[in-house]
Length: 64
Image (tube, rainbow, N blue to C red):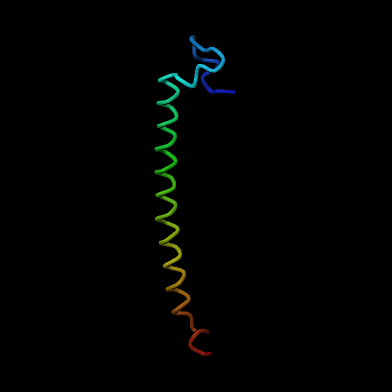
């Protein structure tokens, strides 16, 4: 079910394929997904770097 199906007064079956409001909603969601992915990628890289640095400083590594 489309989110606009209940609220759009001009809804007809298949109208979302050429609806400007639907395309705008899709574009906003695409931008949000890109921003979330960039945020997660940045912090994932940061955490990997920190974990690698902590493992390098680990005392058990020096004993080997």
